[in-house]
Image (tube, rainbow, N blue to C red; front, side):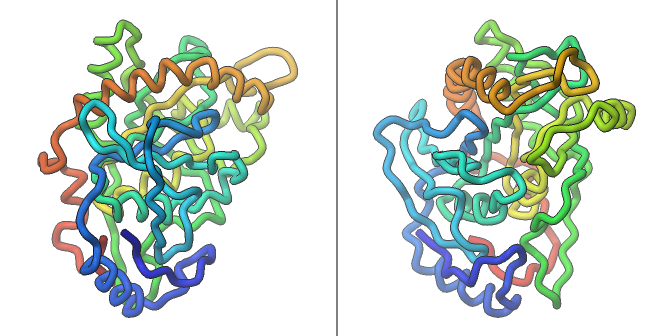
Length: 300
């Protein structure tokens, strides 16, 4: 269940042809999908799936944050991967987003649920609120933003609507049925981190149309689209951002504490969402993001 790895770096170091040959070779020898749903755990959400087993995966972009673990949830095979590592050793700008998503796709995953901790710039969306964003503003820099960065073949994917419509509606329906409705829609602005925003930056972000601020939603969502994966974010509000709260400002300890108080509700929601997600072979616009494009290598 692996792709032959090339040396890890901030950009893919293999040429398009070598990546293509290694991926094709790996795909040919893979026994088939072992999971169809992937869950990427965020800050404070490092483990799930009791009785699951590790499925180590090599990728052309180096190792993922941790080996994915695969288990069963609501009668479906689910792969879980902690975004920051199980020991939260990876700051947001050091997460290997390409390797994480490539690893999940290699295991057969085509639908990704991506919980994340966020700050809110709308007082009515207070700590503990679940939000299902529908738009994204990427203000990150210095990260590897694409799997298609080798010269020779240029790949442009559409990203006007960055989140899966089927995944979003499933989360919203499941949350409503649970009696704890999630907020429908919102723009997530992603900063590079690891520091939090200044008060001036926070007010600037809100003036630009952002409702939430996080550090991991990009380039994760864009890379998922490049791999033709359905990607749905479930944002958990941990604080009001600096320009909209009082006192000395948010701290890392506060974020982890609030997320920790919300994580059991989040896990329960994810179980309901996994059960209700469309079947693996269901048609979705996300799965057609690469239609008609010439790719420099074969995807797993």
